[in-house]
Length: 410
Ligand code: AMP
Ligand code: MG
Image (tube, rainbow, N blue to C red; front, top):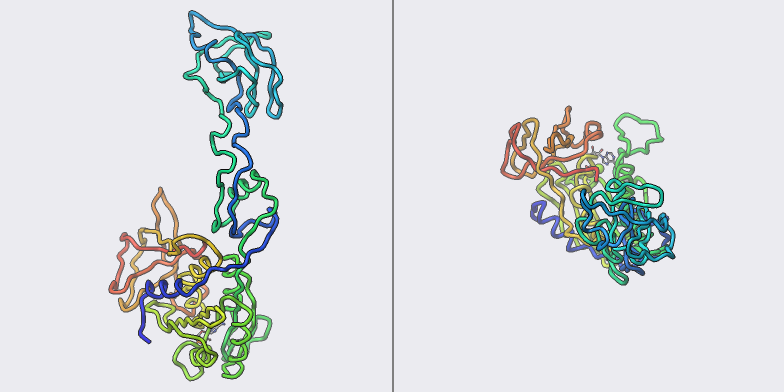
């Protein structure tokens, strides 16, 4: 199987992903971060009724349009309308109402004069400056949207503004896509769990936890299946368990060409069809992607901690978004930044280097992380927020030049 570019890998992976079909009904309180699976329409016009956009006086435009310094017009204040009141008094010619922001306009009022442009004495108000137009500072009923308008469509992620809209449309219960189930397993004889005591030659299984954290952030449900030794039958059993309980499987390790790297062989024996086994990226090249008849998509990630995460940020995130029901183009959101230092690559593979993306005077700046940029070095990957990408064929990006950057924190 040939080595393919990251763009080809992205296209293949996205084509392999089937959007979830199952939905569930949840309450508005639980909806943050979920993906909407229904349309939401408005029961009402919004604003619900004509109301005042400012604190001031409600008037009839024709009464005050001629007000001028040498012809000041005064009106009788016949009622006061705070927000929340259904006004009962009609305003006739020569009259005004005191009104506050959000107050419902009474019959007869078509214009608001802000209080700064008036002078009140007793129950009289003098208009110091005429309104520019009829309807000034009036929020008209239905100006923003109308009853039965679609407010939200399926496939959007529900965040705070959407929650506000859902509350306004009285959607106390709503239908969302169920969360994706993703199994995680770590392979390697050298691996121990963080609670064990490290013996010479061993490595603490960090991927199990890093991948779980990544999945939680993406709104998926991680199913941690633990560590499995590099022993073919054990791995086979574990993979079988994984593909039968999850939409996606993320395994780490065992996808290189070493003696103990059995994953690809096992996937085929279990009836998986392999679509990808090497991608021209560094780190992260030995990525294996297979699909099973039950729809489960298998990502065999490399064991090196940085390589595993780079694949998650670059590919698994897009696949999860699509699976989750999010409607979008599903492409990486590259940001063009200026590199604050020289970035190098051997030019053979698309190279990902990690660092901090900052914004200074409106300009995006990428600062390379200090220390070793090695796929086994998790330490300087922490406290970074972005990957800069040196394309294939480019061996150096000079300090001050532009570089494409992928956020790892969104
Ligand atoms: P492999 O892809 O299995 O050849 O592993 C490549 C490197 O990543 C080796 O140094 C492994 O010890 C290390 N590694 C593999 N799995 C994990 C893991 N779950 N957590 C941390 N390091 C790992
Ligand atoms: Mg291994």
